Every structure is written in structure tokens, then in C-alpha cells.
Image (cartoon, rainbow, N blue to C red; front, side, top):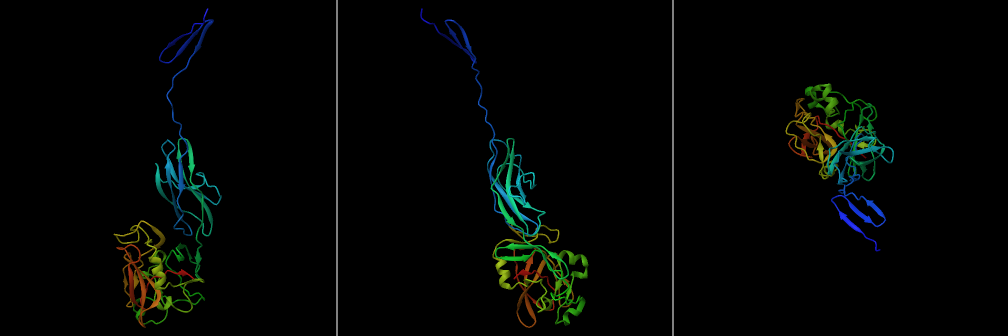
Length: 323
């Protein structure tokens, strides 16, 4: 007798009947479920490297099929940093983000990479290495952060020293005595010590260009050409916000880490002017026997505002540049 096969189909099962008995195959239908994978991302170039901070970031091109719950940059002195090391937290979702790495040690090599976390785990971008800038110390023991900008290395703070490089004191002079001087002198704005700690000291041009050197060993007063090179980077040179700058403090979005402050000036008549409004920074270039050039950075312009022709007896700020 021939074998007889009977097939009946229901919604969720197929039943096969055979001659010698019943063989049951239960084939359950199911919907396909997507399984999330870790995110895919890259690490941005490390920039704006100072002695204690740097800027980095990343770009998340694929969330792995699940929401990005956290993203940022992690860093360490070890070659494979993870989110268990130092890290930033820079929002959620895909796309590009920027991270500020802080609390770094001067003259130290670090490794950094972007990370992104979804329900499946943590994805990492490529690992990059960078070295923080060194600090520099003047003869008084003041320690300054430095910043690499292009081919130049600048102090990231205004000078506060009260002695020349050889140890000779720079006289602290206030009032109308500035007008009669043809030798070096300094003061703090309004002769207040708290202005010194924030904005640095004001020096006349004779102190800035004394052959005993006011900058630390290996550093000097910048020329107009060196200021022009800095300005040509197109980077923001000012500290952002209005904690120290008068509003509006017009700034570019691309900070250099130079962090210029509006230290104002002391006129040759002993009067103080423009604190919170303008930074007056000596150059090494003189105009004539009475006047020399300063670079100007003000609150209503981004970057370098221009040049000022100042009496050599006036008091202005100083930023040193590395030889």
C-alpha cells in the first residue's frame, strides 16, 4: 500500500502525518530582532595644547543601532585609555563633539581617544598622543603656563616679575614720577595687589627693553613681526566671557589658549586707564626716541585689534615669547 502523507497548515504550526504514526514538527514563527553593536567613531586631532589643558573631540558615524547614552574623550599616560581613566562627558547622540581636557601635568606625554557608550557597550576612536607644554619660572619664582601656537611658544599669562634676569630689582614706582623716568619701573593697576595677581604688572618700555632682560632665560619681548605671526593664525587670543573683560567681549569660536586679559595701562602722568577694556602689550620695536609700539587687544574685536604708539614712560603689560 502506498505511503500516504497529509499536510495541514495553521497559523503557527505545520503538522505532518505519516503512515506508521504521527510525527509532529512544531515550527514556531518569530519576528526578526536587531541586535545592537558598539558605536563606530573617530578621534579628532588634539589642539590648543597648554601646560595644563588640551582640546580634542570625536565624530560618531554609527550608533550601532542603539541610542548613544554618553560620549566624550578619555585620556591617560598609558597607551590605551578607557572610560575608566580621566574622561570628559560631552552629551549624547551621534555626530561631532568637542572636548576640553583639563587637569593635565606640564611637559607630559598623554594618550587620548574618543569614546561612545550605547546599550551594547563602549566604542572607541583611534588613539592619539600629545605632549603638554612646559611651564616657565621667572627669577622671582612665579610659574607661568605656556602655549604652542603654530611655530611659536608663548607665555599664557602676563608677566609679574619684579627683578631683571640677573637679580637686579626693578623699581616699583607710582604717580607722576612715571613722567620723569628714563629707566625701568613697574606698578600694578591702581597700585592694588589683587590686580597684579590677575592681570600681571605694568612696566614702562625702559624695563621691557633693558639689556639685563626682564623675561626668563630663553625668552624675550616679542617684536611686531612676531605679534603679526600670532595674529595670522586667525585664532582667538582672548579669555572668553565677561569675568575680566567688559561686555561685549567679542570672541572667535576657535580659542588658541593665549587667554589675553585687559590689563589696561598706566599713563606717563600716573593715571590708570582701560582696565577690563583693553590689553596693551609692549613690543620690542620703538617708533622714535619718545615712543614705542604696543599690540592692542580690546573687548569689541576678536584677535589682535591693531597697534598703539605709546610714550615709553607709560606702563603696559608684557607677554614673553620663547627664543
